Image (cartoon, rainbow, N blue to C red; front, side, top):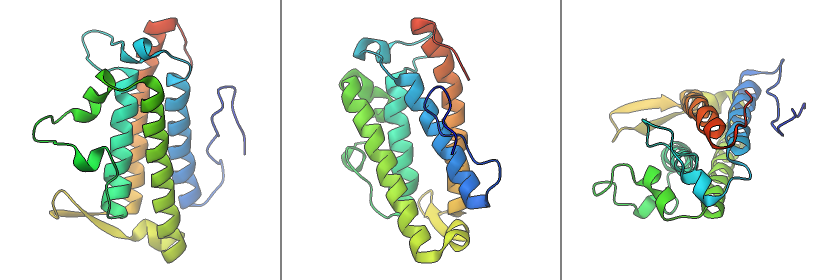
Length: 180
């Protein structure tokens, strides 16, 4: 296991499919942690025009994304605050949480969601084995489609990578911090 200068665990160069997917997901999670590390509440709320995205909003959004895909769809239970969120009243409630939560609260919410996701993945792979777990399917979009755990993991990697690109720009605008 190789840790880079920013504390990110490098994905394996040689590994099976499961190790590779989990490795890249972990790397993307570590990148978000790095991009939001040591920022004040005010800095986590800063946006970069013309977008309304903030680093704190990304922490909350990705906490929700973790919960939605893994806790809810794979594990069968959504966690708070998402389980009681009125999404009809505020479709972007995850992004808007930054206006009322502190940076420490947002970081803890995100870490708790990541930990819950890891527990769900561990449970499913423990029950089914890695290959069968990746092949297992879950109902999404109100039961209109089935997607595999493999698809969910790739989607999470894509979601993190996309937002980590946004995070690069926002972090640089806040304090000049750069890096891949």
